[in-house]
Length: 142
Image 1 (cartoon, rainbow, N blue to C red):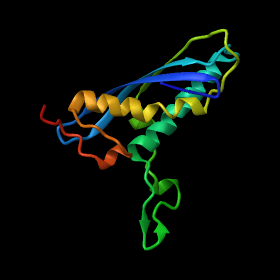
Image 2: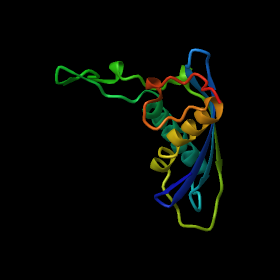
Image 3: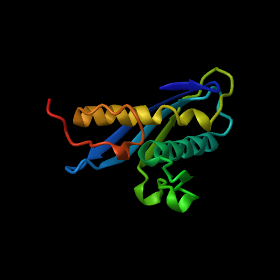
């Protein structure tokens, strides 16, 4: 859960981890309180976009340097979440008496922690740095 720009956003992640440690985010459920919602469809779209942006950063977001130069010159070399790997997304709005809040940025910060908590619940592995692709997520002995 996170609050910014007058908006409170909470995410819950449903994930699966393959036997080889591969992570798949199956579903993200979000609850959003942005005060009075003028355009519910627009707010949902902004939160959905924030989730995709946050997933890209959390799962794959890495800039690497080789011989003093950035390897990822543009989007073809930067692995982004695309439709085929996008999880099911549910956004639930709660309208309140608060002032109108922001819609784009508040959905990003709670995403990686939601996934990290789901990974810990499923595997016993605590991920404390990103991206997730750099971690062995095979089930830890408990």
